[in-house]
Length: 492
Length: 102
Image (cartoon, rainbow over all chains, first blue to last red; front, top):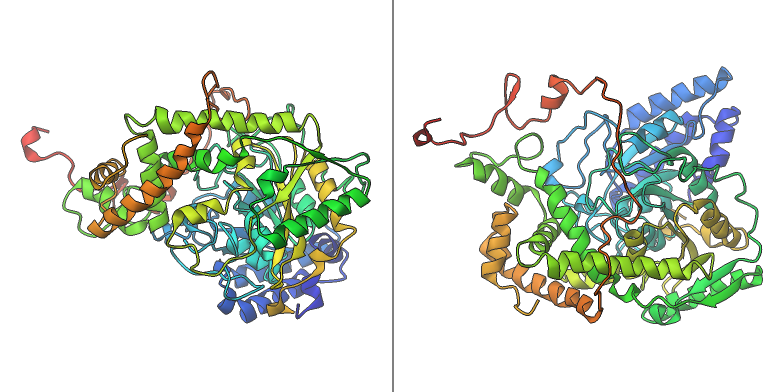
């Protein structure tokens, strides 16, 4: 990375800004220099706010100079996936249908970042409405992988992952419906956490699959991930599915982060992982050896229904999407077709013009699965399979503290490789989807590289609301390895 | 799930989805949806007799709040993104024809 400043963790940088050793303006300028240098190639952002960000950085510096509290993320430059509402800039979801939409309110997660003193530098690219695994479905721009410019960054939070990897921000928010935080984190060599469903408010997150969607952080270290969770986790009256803190208390995720978990029991599912590429399997096996070296016991667990997760997911997620996306009708906001001949055309032509192919495909699939005569065979069946999958986790967690497996069966694939074959693209989500169907948290941490020097992520899954332990388990690996310190060649 | 989805069915689903697909899209989607549905049929390998459908992975109950008046967005903010407006209203093409007596 060109500047040592950009390499700092959010935690260090925040403390240095608060202590007056570094100014937020200086750090934010460094971020915009990196954006100036790499953004044309990488295309991580849909919009950036240089002027506003520098003004805000200046305000934080003034606070620090006056000895005032700067906040847990005071002066640190972060990015937000462009499917979260912000009152500044547009909120596009990388869709032509929302290209000029300006939200009248901030998403709760964004509001919490701002309250913690964060400087928001821009909104990152994604697969349109978060539907995809490569960010190639963006209706607005292409994002490439900072590790190899011929490869995808993963998706759907590909812009957030690429921006964090390339030093074009210190941390970012993403959203994960079927792996959309963990998979791009894995493919771009950064840390990505999907919290338990209900842990982070979804208020202001543009809905895709409402029973699956969850906001979470993408960072370069596990510590920064814990810091971000401290800021964004918690109950929100504006989201009726956000979980009551009496039922599941939010903790200080940084407090015990460096304390290793003694007697850790790691679950593995050998036959399920057999389909991953050899380099990926080797890296995961090596990572598990590291845990053994740290005293962990490895236990084989049976999870016979995991193999059905993709099938169930692509029915449930698309069914929910078909309902959620009915709101884009050209009436209240978003694109409206010019000169419709009647009111039906306001809907059907606006939607035809505004949505990209993958979004249409998923709306169609979901509508089909919910339509008369097919509901029982598809949607109801998928919900039952979902219960069996969750049961697999419940049973497994009686025997182990966490389950380890790859995030993705391959490292970053070539741009265009899977774009014409939607089923092939869906199958790449095999290891991430079950966590969303079951509501449990999952993290991706850098654990190696393939023969082409592309990053590989280790996925760790743990029971609902155990993010504190999950982060500590991840930190155990990070504190004994150097994979998270490697930077992509493009910015080296 | 025996019958394969065909172009007529794709057109019907497009109509239900309020998507005005082109002929090329109908053809493309028919093949793709067929492949996806063939894959999804894999679920039939599982006996789900007696398994409860799981719509939501955490126990959810109705959330109540006190019945008190709070601030709202207000007219200007609400209309700010309107594709077309007429004063304090969203403007849309005529919905009822003149013969309806409306």
